[in-house]
Length: 186
Image 1 (tube, rainbow, N blue to C red):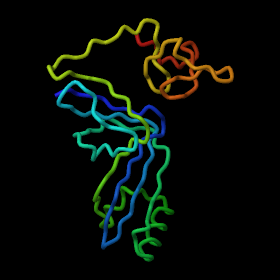
Image 2 (cartoon, rainbow, N blue to C red):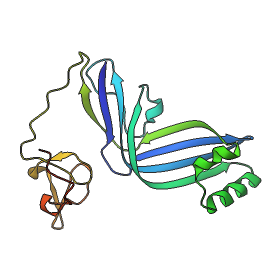
Image 3 (cartoon, helix red, strand yellow):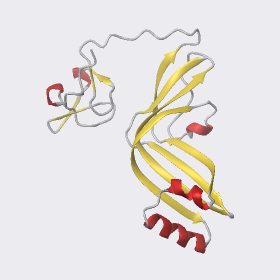
Image 4 (cartoon, rainbow, N blue to C red):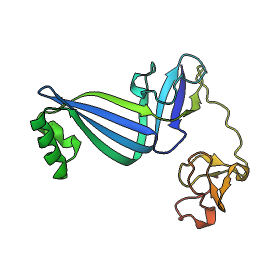
């Protein structure tokens, strides 16, 4: 089996949906993530057949989350709840409670989805023969301050006098202007 790392190519393109049930009512909690990464295996050294819009938890591969970070939004869909439950949930969330606290009130997690809402990027971590792929020399490449992907100077995009990372579309921060804890990758 080959191991692959899966990441979105655009920020804010991971949508996690959790469905919780109680007494015939269902509430859906949607969280948008700025970035994240996942891992899966394939039978051969070809990347997995995962496309924009696919649910990573139900795509035909055993996908495991490595991490998600920088939640951008959280929405609560209570359309599948009766009127009394909708009112209770609205008050519950208005009081500053988290959806994680619903379990204490008898809600049970039912289904979950992790939608990758852009074309995914695949990185081969381990080939089917157990060897690691040969890494390309980074030369004069530097890791992007926002997404940590290696970028060479000729890959940067210039827009209105600002350099932009081609991977995450964030403004480029020159190495000399970065905090001390962010260094060149070598």
